[in-house]
Image (tube, rainbow, N blue to C red):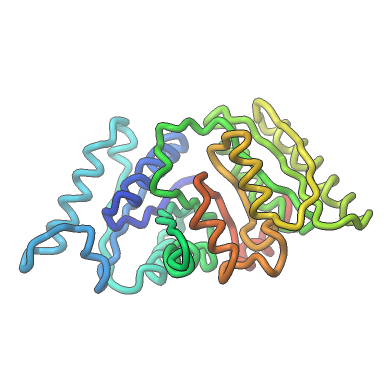
Length: 284
C-alpha cells in the first residue's frame, strides 16, 4: 500500500477519521493525502468570519492536524490538497488520478428518517470507488486497538476479494481474524461453497502470518444484522465486507439497508463495492 486518501471537512467526524487513517498509514509507511473539497456546503465546519481567506484557513487547519501527529516519519509523509466541486465526484476523481490504494471516509450516522439522507457521501464513495474504502463513525476513537477483524464469507465469488487487504491489516496490527460463514438458505451445494470459500480464506490467513483465525458458521436471512451482532459480540475493531454481497443479496444495496449498515455501524467498515474492481481481481 503506497498511498491513502482522506476526505476532510474538519468536522469532529473527519478529524477522528484522520486519526484512524494516520494509524494505518504509519503501519504501511504509506503516503497520506488529506483533501478538502470546496463547495457551497463545505465551509460550515471551518468556523471562519465572513470575508476571511478560505484557502488560508483550510491550510491552517491542515497544519493543525499534521502537527498533532507524533510519528515524525508519518508526519513528513502527509500531503494536502484543495479542490473545487462535488465532494463525491472529486474524491473518486482524485483517488484515480493519484492512484491511491485506500480511501478513508467519515460516516456521521443518524437516527430515524435522517439516516436515509445523511452519510450519502460515504455510501456514494463506496459505490463508485475503484479501491477499498474504510468508513469510520464519529464516536469510534482510534484508542480502541485493532485486535479483531470480522470477515463475512458467503457463496459469491466476490466474497473472498477483501481477504488479502484484511490479512495485511491483521498482520500489521497483530489482530485475530474471525471468518463468519453465512448460510442464507439450506441448499446443499450453496452451503458447501460457503464452507469451501471459508476454508480457502482460513488457509490464506494462516499462510500469510495471521496470528489467530476463528471460524464460525451461521444461518441467517438478515446478513447485516447478523454481521453487526457478531462483530459486537467479539468486540471487533473492523468489519470487512463486499457491501452488496454478504449483506444479503440484491435487497441489501447502497440505496436502502446497505446504506444503514454503513451509516449505523459503530465499528469501522472496510468495504469494496465497485464491480469492475471485483471482476479484475476475483477471489484469492
